[in-house]
Image (cartoon, rainbow, N blue to C red; front, side, top):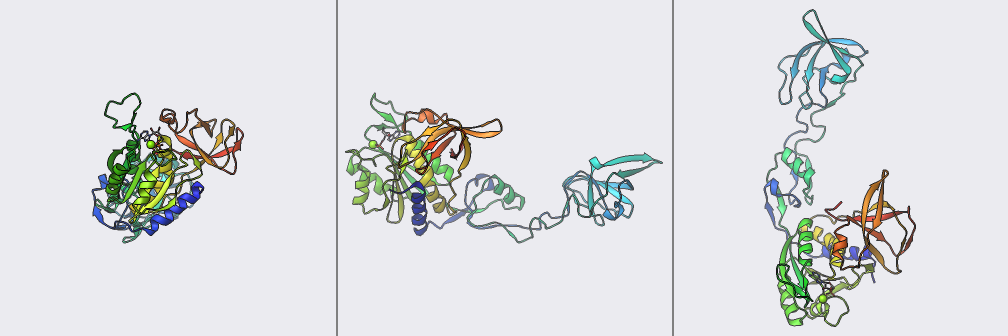
Length: 408
Ligand code: AMP
Ligand code: MG
């Protein structure tokens, strides 16, 4: 059985080899969060477009400020967004605001905190308490980027930083890849829609909701197929439908039970399997294959298993299908708050809570009743990662933590 890192590697290798929907569209910037660029974002002019003051203070010539205590005549002020019409001569300075254009013939900005005003004989003079260097507190025009320079490459994910950057260079309708359509199929005789009355032995479909949210936040477009009972013919019909999408995620029906029919139905359709088990708990029965070029994930139906296997294996695949590079697992390290003893041969992803205690990140597993226990999971913000190589941990040791996306 593959380790989770090898299984991820396999997913990435296979999905990179499949063809991707190469259609792009332009979208309004305020609707572009999470989208992937299909065309670069380019600087429309130099950045900054003028020599920019980075402090509130006075613009002057460094040559006039070689010694502490220099006194210069104040000849005007420059507000952000305005230029300075006059000329600043030797022995003179102008008051300047953060973000304003530094006037010609000056080459230093001195923080207001390092000056004092001397108002004698009707003329305002500024006393500079320190010497100044040419260039201080100024970002010269073009220092951040040159006009025509690529600022965001094809494949970049538009997060809040990128959206601000695109807006600042006037790119208000970026060209992005059309989102991959991802079919989501829940399976199980016992599963009913969440808005239906559940009989005493029935289970409401939570997985379609978690999966749709995970797909959406990963940059895909969820296509909800509802639930199929554990009947081969019905599964076949739904799976065939799902294969019209760019990827298919199935929850449930991949374990060893008599009515776990998903793998058989996939095999009948000619699916090529790359793994049908990963050495992890929860999530061990996870299946990955492709049929007609469509990647298929069969995730175990216990909700915590479904969620964690999505994060480990489906997310990197969706990154690629979205047109970006697969994101690495965002592992952190934290101090373990209590000892751990885990069973061999598997990596464990234990629902846990990360908190800052006495200036350090401390992680504690929460009590849970196994991979069906979403109640416990809702009180967590991360998974503790216990690898096969080291199963016994003492309190105070530094251990890997996988943040829960959106919770940390
Ligand atoms: P399975 O992987 O089909 O053996 O299902 C394992 C457990 O997960 C069973 O207890 C199911 O009732 C539960 N389960 C399966 N699918 C869902 C779902 N869509 N929503 C909530 N629980 C589910
Ligand atoms: Mg089932």
